[in-house]
Image (cartoon, rainbow, N blue to C red; front, side, top):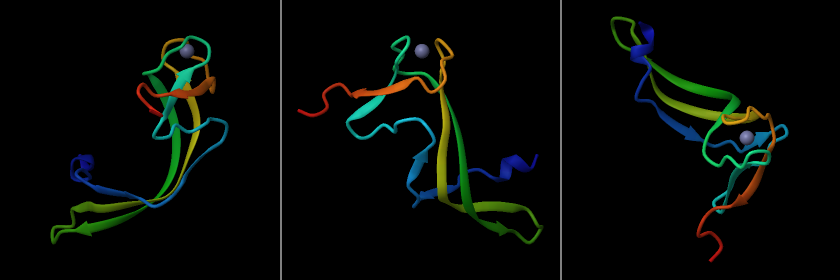
Length: 98
Ligand SMILES: [Zn+2]
């Protein structure tokens, strides 16, 4: 019910994303499951601390107009194919580095 009002939010990211155990992909690298070779499907468990600019209308309905990510941590990455947890490695993206 309330959820419908919390859409269309402009999210800003100031924070650096950190990870517990998982290497982060960059502009030229991507994740690859070290066990089965999956490149495309992962469940990412992420915890983030955000500051929301909540704008309430006169009726009292809240709407988040801005969301600033203060810090973000990827806690684990699970492969959707073989369910391996935190077994991702970084490989070059196609066409990268040329
Ligand atoms: Zn896998």
